Length: 147
View 1 (tube, rainbow, N blue to C red):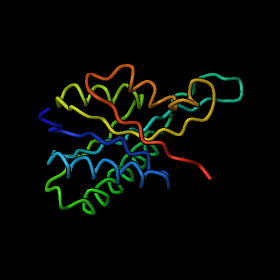
View 2 (view 1 turned 60 degrees about the vertical axis):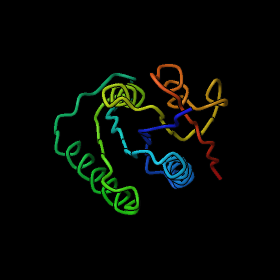
View 3 (view 1 turned 30 degrees about the vertical axis):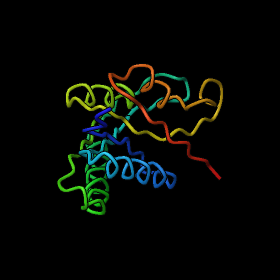
View 4 (view 1 turned 45 degrees about the vertical axis):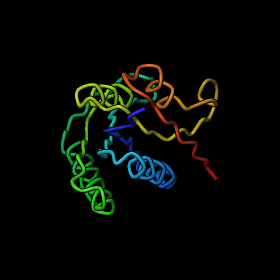
């Protein structure tokens, strides 16, 4: 086995993400792999009648994306031992955007956190489950616990 060359880490900015980052960094060190980070902003506002509400003002969306970019840049700076870390902040479905970037960038390992709350989500978590079943490569779902 030649090992992994490019590891993509799904970042959700929760307190539990540190376990995911640590595991991904360990894997990158072990395989001397390139490390990349992705965060997906999902804007989906539903009113009380469960109707999709399209944003009237995209300024809020822009602020959320800018904040995510800044947080991701700070995280990448902490991981400077890996050299230049490619970072993506995407808008859309978390699962679809992670899979799209992984395929386009020829990633061979995706690392995501698994919250596992209910239903099939108890096994992996809805995003981790979706990534696992649609990934063009290996997926490491790091179990994170909510206290």
